[in-house]
Amino acid sequence: MLYQQVAEQLAEHIRTGVFAEGERIPSIRKLHQQWGVSQSTALAALSALEAQGLIEARPRSGFYVKALPERLQVEEHVPAPVAVSRHQLINHVLNQSRQPGLMHLGAAVPEAVFLPQEILRRISNRCLREQPGLITDYAFPPGNKVLRQQIAVRMQAAGCSVSASELLITQGCQEALSLCLRVLARPGDLIAIESPAYHGLLQALEALGLQALEIPCDPARGMDLEALAAAIQEWPVKACVVSANFSNPTGSLMPDEHKQRLVNMLSEAQIPLVEDDTYADLHYGRRQPLPLKAWDREGNVLYCSAFSKTIAPGFRVGWVAGGRYHQPLQQLLTVTTMASHALSQQVMAEYLHSGDYDRHLRKVRRQYRQQLHNLVDALHASGLPVAWSLPQGGFLLWLILPAEVDALAVYEQMLQKGISVMPGSLFSASERFRHCMRISIAVSQPDWSLLVAALRGSLTD
Image 1: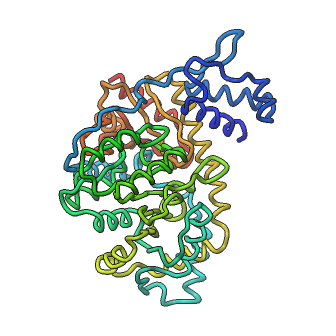
Image 2: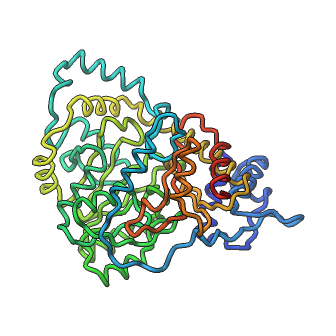
Image 3: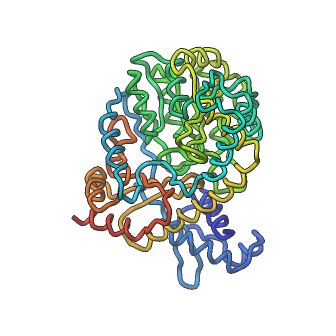
């Protein structure tokens, strides 16, 4: 809706300092004149910001910017590198979260209603009628040519100078990330990562015997580049892994000027940059945010992504554009995976060629944005002592509880009430963020009042 777009723009201005703490927000009349929206739309946008706790109304004066909760500020301290040992706990929580009968808010997997099931079924049936051998055929590296061409077209539209010959099809983004780490580093090496970081990345680091150097991140704007610059001066960093567009778990979006600075900084330091861009297609704004790869001129960015969050998780179709590391990545992919399933790659290629993907994305973005606002409205109305930073894309919300609360204990209590969430300590190699949790909004017809009630009970027990 238009008022939500206006609210998101104003929220970004607040987070980036365009409107400072205590400053008066433009009036309804000024928003109407300057933004070309109706006064009712302007009022709805300001009301949404007030519900999010970003602004406050003052009688006969207007709306003013409130201070962002202290718990959302970036931590200045960069901890020393640590060996990762989170696999057992992560697997335990993931297995519990998959139990039937739960309200599944833990796993970052969209429910079927948000996926193009029917058209994929039709394409699959047609492919099998026309090419029966696809059901048993291999797809050898670098992968289905038409699929790579379709992905290259999309990447070029997103600002990346990448051809089909520079792409490798992988078994999801997780395999792409693991391949990059295996090519770039050896056991004991230091990898700079976001903090908090995607738990699948932590598992990959642990499996490969790599150490994590956790760089603080702002929940709205992503990695602290000053902290990263200091860290690479102090430590022998072998590679850096970043998700600049709607990171998992916080949903942060790095500003373009920060993206360019990050790419240039690591290129000058001769440190490879691995980009996880899985959620970029789920932007709420008018245009897709540029990936880090768009500023890569030297092949130093290894771009990883997948269709697991938007089209078909079970197809496990991902890809990597490895820049100057393309050949060693292809060799490693060949000797490890050897081949993938031909049918899923062919179906994905035909689906992308059909043009339906963009129509699907427009629909699902609206659904996620509405789900997110409904959840935030419910949390704000609840009066619970929680904080959050409103993401501009994706389907995840990073929830910050009072500092003294153990989110792992809250998770266990909520599980008994039929709701699964993801405790924050799973997203840190050093067990930080114990007072945080990640919530997925990619669920069908959620009753957010049940979540609020379970949270209230867990926080007061």
